[in-house]
Length: 465
Image (tube, rainbow, N blue to C red):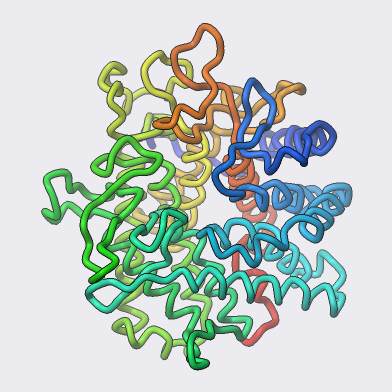
């Protein structure tokens, strides 16, 4: 990335206003034209949202997008869509024992609605409040039950692949465990053994930092600072780590950039959350060496992944889909010029930019934008945001269902649409990319307006923390 020209966040206001106009139109078009009987909309094919039977991990982003639209604009049309969609469609996600996506689906819906209540943006109806809280508590407990132990006495929340599989993605999804804990909930296991949700979240974060993130410390022949493996594979008989792997990246020894982005935003968010906790929570960190030790591991992981992104991403802040994609060499010195979403060799992934940019901004603010280090990350995030708000990446085509263009879902499986006359996927959108672009823009908009910072734990305002 090229960070030579700092961006004034206030200069983004006109682009942000246009973004929400386009966003609202997209949400309404999907509501009008998408056939729900086909399943959850996942990504677009030739400009129209379609589904892909793997897991229903994107439905919370659909209704969460409407809730964020209301948050940003105050238009109650979108509140109605988000509320009704959450009540009518999201219960199965709360009790879904087969996925690791609870922090995606349920914090995006129940969590955002509860947060808006806590902020005084929605009526604080007793039963509605309790409805959102119980959904978050149950979701946190179900997520935490997906637990595998490692040989060193630790553990992780395993992916939908099974108990052997630790995905880097889940660091962002496991934040729901912290919410559940602060709402007074716990995991109840055999013989009524009570297990701390926050403890499991911390341990999962430590395991991800150890096994999915590299630090240039000689772990293997491809170890470099900030590289991530999508999946860490374990022997379930004894809990020993066996190898890195990739489900959606090119290989276990290359960096799938959306997986990297999940870590980029997941660790800074957790650091913000830990900082918000009062001293009475410090005992929860003691089994892991104490709060300061945990925060040090998380901060190292956050810096490493954000550094890798900055070092290996095109100059305008948009990454290619995998840092080791086999035809990247055909693009020459791609890091020192803007990304080309229409090239013939490897696709970019705008969704990785939308997710990662929020991580960069959060890490910069966590470290302090008045410091050189914090300012560096903050400005990198703003650069990626500015590029995403440009007409190259934000869809102005009224007939296109998607909001942010040039998103990639699963390149190895060949699921992404390649337009006629093109050699690589381009011009399409994803439900997670659109949602996280909205989340990113809302976060920055709130900063500019001096409003309460957008956080996943905003739904806890007024509780014991």
